[in-house]
Amino acid sequence: MSLHETAYAKLNLALHVRARRADGYHELETLFAFVDVGDVLTASTAALDKVHVLGEFAGDLTDPFDNIVMRALTALPRAEGMAITLEKNLPVAAGLGGGSADAGALFRLVERSHGWPDDWATRAARLGADVPACVLSETCLGRGTGTELEPGPTDLAGTPVLLVNPRVPLATGPVFQVWDGTDRGPLPTGSAREVALAGRNDLEAPAIALCPEIAQVLEALRQTNPWLARMSGSGATCFALYDSAAERDSAASAMPQGWWKLVGKLR
Image 1 (cartoon, one colour):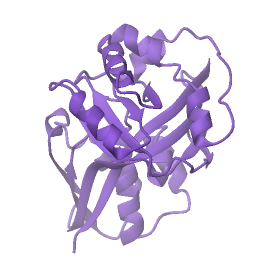
Image 2: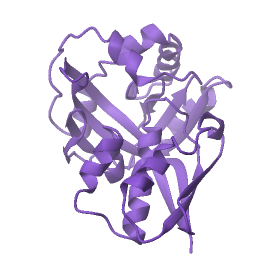
Image 3: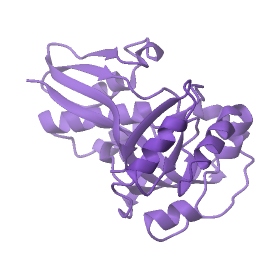
């Protein structure tokens, strides 16, 4: 019997970088949210663990043993192997937590079929700072490196969202290296809408310095009159939030043909 799970695209509605740490990581405060679409994982029982990747962005994941889904399989004890088919719909190195979302979906598949170990969150964090949030895939606040989670306000559930990427990959490490080190203050409090509107993404400026196309995407999105347009994570994907699906769909049709785009709703 096959099991299916969506790897929900991750958004940072706000991302405040507070300080560089001695260990090379950064102190963050972020409001995570998740879109109701993303990659798709299908799992079945197998003698040995294996991962097969297909879909639009499968070509960006050429080493099956370095795939985070395989590493997630290795991190979770099970009585038998699992064969995973990963339909890669989200661009790689795009600020959507694509790999982390895939790992999060794999954790949920294992939970459904075998159950979780008590230390699942620690195992998830070893795979990446965004992975624990992606396992939950619900609006939450992240602190520390992003692994210290607490429930977030849910008032934006169902909000229409448009994701746009200029088809330029952007690795996280170089963006953090360009960050100027200035602490611009803590994450605001309030509803998710209030936090998103009053918050910011401190990685937006350094990402634009490395990838000027991000500024073009943001300008194009802002011309469609969303109530918020912002870059997610370390880029290069940007998102726009609308009050109606009709506004979102009209905006999607106005985006340049060469850009990647995806429509959905916040979970």
